[in-house]
Length: 161
Image (cartoon, rainbow, N blue to C red):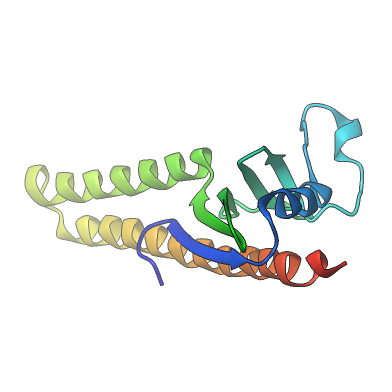
C-alpha cells in the first residue's frame, strides 16, 4: 500500500501504439458535465481524452467517488509493439481537500500542544487528521486496484477482437 495518493506501472503490449490508442479511444468518451447530452448511457468504460501520444482518463462510475484515480498514460512505440506508462493520481480537487483538511487538523494539533495546552484536544485533532489521511489513502488504493483491473482487461482481452 502506498502512503501517497500516487501509483504507477509500466505495461508492455505486443500491439502497436496506434492500435492501443484506437481501442482505448473506442471505449473512452469525452464528457462535458455541463451538457446533459454528453452524459447519455453508452458502452464506454472510461471518461476522458485519448490523444496521439497518450491519454488522461478515469473509470466510468454510476455514482460519484472522491477517491477515483485519474489515469495519466503515455504510449511509446517499439519495434515489437508498444510500452504503456501509467500514473494513477487523485484528481486535483480531491487532492486539494485531502491536503487542506490534513494540514488544518495538524495545525490545530500544534495549537493545542504549544499555544493552548489541552492535550485531549490535541490527541483528538491529530487522530482525526491521521485517520482522514489514511482512510483517503486506503480508498484511493482500492480504487486504483479496480481501475487497474478494468484497464488490464481492456488491454488483454478487448484488443484481441
